[in-house]
Image (tube, rainbow, N blue to C red):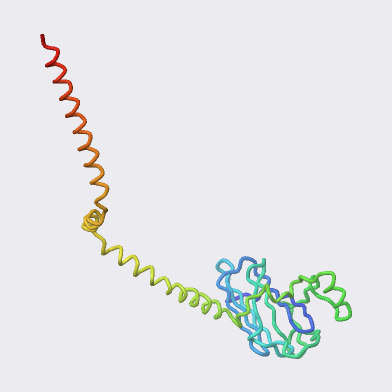
Length: 210
């Protein structure tokens, strides 16, 4: 049997912020429909589940999640601009749902709040615009698909497998002959000098014999 976690919410004229009291939740799944929000996850061995019929319509394609915060947070784009003042359909009340006064701003004070805190929790850039966790799978598929470009690396590695030690002989054959010629020439020149020196020594010895 699943447990219903507490839910806190607040709003702006164009969006609704929903926080789930589920610290360190795993296996998160959620879905936005025009008038419905669902959430599920696990904390340890305990399964959490939330089903909310919304007061008015939202745009599912423009709803997102921030799962990097202490508690999962969701931002829903309203279909029509304006304050709801209620989260649940038919102005229903629930013991699990309450107003998040830390992020709530009255409509009359909205301008002042935005000037004092322009980077608030309603910043859409902090949310993954996925329209449901299925978008995460699509993102990962796209990343893995991009790795297909590494196929060129496979071709390169296959080319390396074709290499063998006989290729060293080809390298030696291709080496310029000037190096060996220079070495032999130097050696020959040195031998000639030694021969000349030996001849002079022998002549000297002959001339010195009494």
